[in-house]
Length: 440
Image (tube, rainbow, N blue to C red; front, side, top):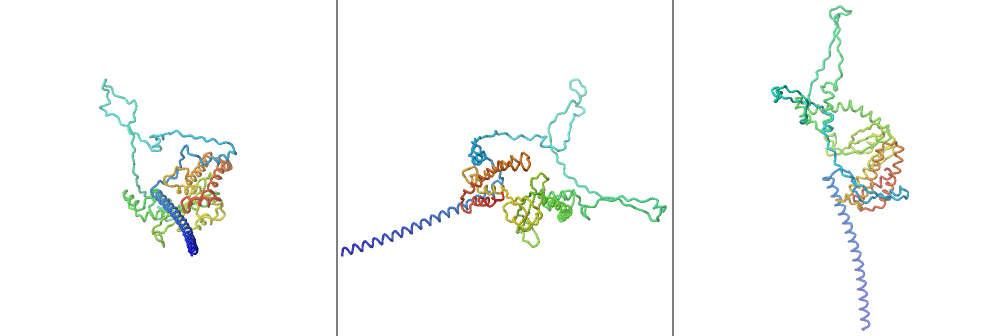
């Protein structure tokens, strides 16, 4: 029986060990699962904090994207330059520029182009006598004491347009071939707007104030009242609409035809909110499109167009007939435009990396996002030096292949090695750059 008791005890111990092993295995899996959950939660919190920092930066931070390199920092492009040098040793030379104080603007530069009037003050007659000998003093020179800037308010004039009427004195007295008197009226220029006293200067000023200075029509209405002219905002709006349709629209169409003949163009769109638009809520967002020519040596052309939606069909309609290179951001709507070579913008790629830079780490070169920004900066610096030489397109292409291609090769190689946290700003920046690889 003792032997049986020992066997029973042994089997019980074996069962206990098995149960403990099963429990340990389950606990191990649970711990691993909890660790994975904690890791995912930590990454999610990191992404959320990154989003908070990004939005805070957008709301309160500076909007400038200017870059500045810190002297002495490790260069990220030694490998690319060494490749370009075909094995030749690269010596890094650090040059710290001497601080130069900005030259102070002189009065001549400050008031260049402004009419100068000399106010000359003389001595009273009773003081133009020499206090020593009593001889009358003579002017021997003048001394500049100070300068003052005077503002002359605008003036408003009313032009009454008259036409002289000519009559024949012989016909008037019945001496001519006809018994009726003959009258001829002089021709006068057509009015800018029929049945209106508007002139090109008043309409031009109204447009400039509204679109150049962002001054609403109701405030312009008050300004005109200060000059004693009572113009309602509806009258001002009628001036703008009529002149835009009858004078600016034909000119816009001419430049549109000229832009379509170019071999390079750029396009972008931005959200605008239009109030009181028929059939649409005031909160509905519309879009303003801008199209411009490239730097091809010809006069630049910049045109704007409005559309209630962001549909790519708007770009198709505007660029109908254009065959060339079209540079845009990453919006897929431009893919609908036929017969073009799509080009992407490096400034947009750089912007994504700037947004991915962690808070307070703008000069930490160990951060991948900062490295991405520096690749773009280096590319821009080389392009700026090439552009300053005013070279022919063929020579410009040669220098780009020589100077910029090694930087691009190094950038794409670096990008392939990046493994950022999913859905982070860096992940979005890398994906945006990878999706533009065939078009930059």
